[in-house]
Image 1 (tube, one colour):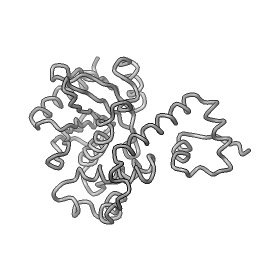
Image 2: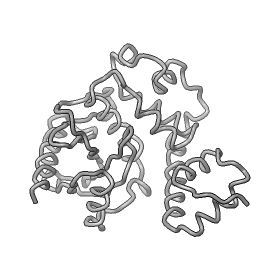
Image 3: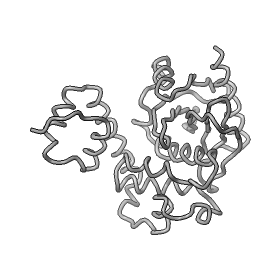
Image 4: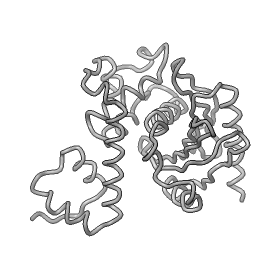
Length: 263
């Protein structure tokens, strides 16, 4: 039996069927000896199955060549997205569902390479929202009931002091959060829900060089993002609310995040 040090990368390889057969026994033994990694593998498996269920109606359809080229960075983005860009998230998600969880985020990190950093931030935030806001059982990794741990864990992983904003005045309660890849770095996603089941998400990553703010409009029936890059934060609030309401939520979240820096 081959013996070597395994990592999270091997979990993705195993899920994608790319782990060499002669390493499988050692990999399974490594999982059994590392409960945290075994739990992570189970979580990734659940995420993968949830995504497959979400796109069960289109998984057997052929992804159009022009969309595949854009998602994989083989075609100019701006020429292909004059009317709307949020479909990039859906196209990428289809590629994810057919090609493996790890490959999706590797691909989406390159979407919009010709666009400003804020566009990339908004695209990543919308893509994450499209996937997880619809989830009922596996939308978050850490629930709101463990808020202190959630804030500490995400802060240490993202590299920013992160507080989960209280958006109850805006009608939203914290559901929980999760850690996500964001290009070559990491991002925190906090999910909120109102009493009607409407969900919004806050996507936060470290961004030390840019300073910008704005609204990133999606398709008419898709989510949109209100984003800002300031004081080391790259943030986007994503949802399908009226733009003025989403902007008010974003203003509240932004103020609380910055207030957390001095607390």
